[in-house]
Length: 321
Image: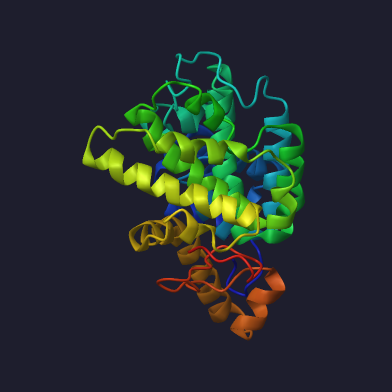
């Protein structure tokens, strides 16, 4: 923001690149810096959309460009809708888990643009999962942008599209179980964004199938054992919300303080970002903090408790146990 609290493309671009210094060396961003105060909104949106789905940049982008966040998300969804086979990978092994192409292991993804990078390599499912993760954060940080997320899911697969492919194999690999952690956490986040909307949208039976498969799965090491326990906990949380059975956690014996703490850790980055928004608005405008956040549709940060956490919900009826 400018010194008077108004939105300024240049000042927010400077703030964004200060938070994400790696992007200063990316061509499209360095050229924007050279323009100084001659930036125009369209070229800024185009540059931001190229890295919007990258987990390292979604939160800083939302924090710096809230005034044009709707245009960024709208453009991202439009580009995703043009990706052929979004929700499936061109090459998969027999287990379907061969490949989550990890964004942090790739060279040149920022320069090429994340959507184009994954699309050209036939990694539609990997791209979809990164989009789902970004949209979980959008639902938490900017609930008023929900319509864009809803449209995205009108044209593509659910956030857990990989799970039926994984459980169709006779035995889940260590890599598959590790990736199930990411998918399950993201799915809870999406579901809590609007339980009434998303509960009736998809067939959630794969989470019950997953629980049944875990009954016979033999962990190969202690890390896999912990991950299986956590994915099992996440699956029970999802089913308890879908079925509106809060006691399901106890029925499955999945009330786990360690898993709960791990879930809180997953939610922490959005909570910290919201706290930063609150602090910034206090300094610039000095509104009543609670009223301001309510007006923006943003939940108060750090609202969780040790054994009864509600970190992502817009409704107080759905508690993670």
